[in-house]
Image (cartoon, rainbow, N blue to C red; front, side):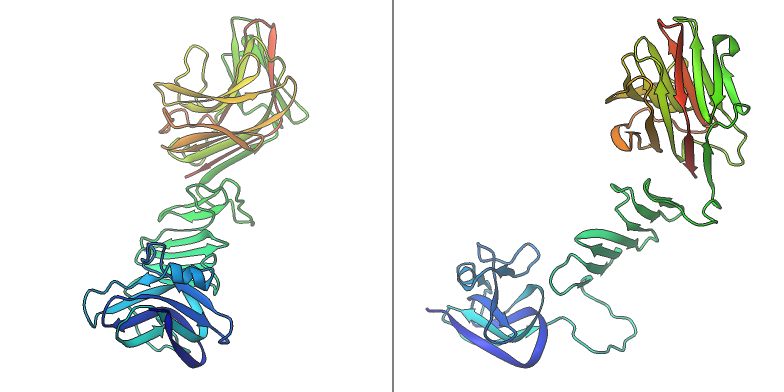
Length: 399
C-alpha cells in the first residue's frame, strides 16, 4: 500500500509533543509537522522501527528517511491505543500522520501535555518529572522530579537542589573547581572560587598568610647547631650544615582559636626554590615534622630529591605514601606549589597551578600533628650547606 496521510489543520499554531493513534491493528507510520503548510519536518522510529530508549520518536533529516525508519505501533488487538512522545515540544499549525498499512483508523490525536495561559491549583501531582527547556534543545533546562531540582546551561549541569536539603551551583563538586556546595551541614567552595566581602572571614575556618616578616613565631628542629634560618626582605632561607649528618627544619605551631585537624579540608600554597639540585633533600609539608629517619608522622606535602625530582608525600602515623610528580626543579628558580587534602579521600599536588598527581592511601587523620601548620626542611648529603627558599605562604583549613 502506498503512503497515505491524514492531516490536521489547527486555527492557530499549537505546541505539540505527543501523538496518539486508535486503529484496528498495528500500523507503519511517521509524523510530519509544519507551521505554514509548505515547509515540513518529520519524526519517525529508529532503524528497527521502534521508539528510542526514552519511548520517543526521533527527528528525521528528510521525508525519505522517515519512510525508511517508520514507527511500527505494535498494538496486538483491534482498538488498542498506540502513543508516542515527540523528541521535544514543537510548534505546528499543520500535522500529518503518514501510514502505508491497510487498516481502520478510528482516531488520531496530537497534543501537548500542558498548555495554558493560567493555572489555578493547589498541588499539581505529575506522573513523571517536569522538564522546562528552551524551544530548540535541552541544553538550557530546568528539571523537577522526585529527587529534587536540577538546572542545565549550555548542555552542562549547573545547579542541583536535592530533596535531602543539599545543593550546589556552578561546576559539579565531584569534578570541578568553581562551585558553591552545601552538604546539609557545611558550605564548601571550589579551589578556584573566592570568598569576597568584608565578612568573608567570619566562619569556622583557619586561614593563615605570611610573607615571613619575622621568624619569632617559628620553631627550629633539632636546634641552632644543625643549621640556620635567615629572614630578609620578606623571604625565608633554611640552611642545613655539616653534610651527611644533619637535617634542619623550621616550623610554625601557633595556639590557634580553633583546633586544627586532618579530618578537615586543608590546603597550603607557597613558593620554593633550592640552592642545589644534587646530593640533597629539601621539602615543605603541613603536619608533624618528618625526620629523615622516620617518614610516617602525620603530614602531607612535597619533597625534592637529588636531581630536583619532586615527589608528593603523606603519612597516617604508621605508613608513608609517595607519588612521583614527574617534575624536576631547576636550581635557584622559584616555583609555586600547592597541596590539597580532601579528608579520607585524597591529597592533590599542584605545581604552577597544574595538577601533577594525587595520593589516596595512608592519608593523615585526627588532630595529632595537625597543629604544625607548615614545616620547611633541608638535608645535605655532600654539600657543606643546602638551602631552601620561600617568599610567601598561605594555609587554609575549612572545618
